[in-house]
Image 1 (cartoon, rainbow, N blue to C red):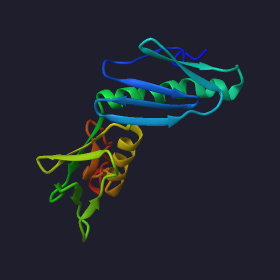
Image 2 (tube, rainbow, N blue to C red; image 1 turned 180 degrees about the horizontal axis):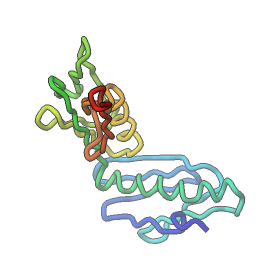
Image 3 (tube, one colour; image 1 turned 45 degrees about the horizontal axis):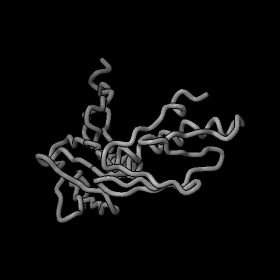
Length: 179
């Protein structure tokens, strides 16, 4: 039995879940998320908790059991609290700013890099070098943060670039460090 999959998901106050076969809709104060779960697992609501149960002990059902429980738990947390990823920009002349909803990054290229957020994602910039990506869908927040980081990943010699907050970049010695 999956240790993660068998744990019930508590529903906080003001969060409701509607289950229609394999389709689950979770509504909360921050918004609404829906997902169609794969076959092999089923979701039931017992009071103010959601319980994910696998239909049989086949390999695919065992694999999907913990995954579906985690996906549902992320949906519940997203509509009640939301998710955010913080990015740091390091480098001389590297900066970020928000114009309307668009995030504009100056990262040493000949042109500024612009990001238009998808529906439900917000950008915030603090002090020109700290970017925060927030939203209710954990998957989309993580993907957008990864795309921003991929525009100029941190390089190992001077550490310049875009990195996650708290990310440790392994530094290399340059040519002078050889002697």
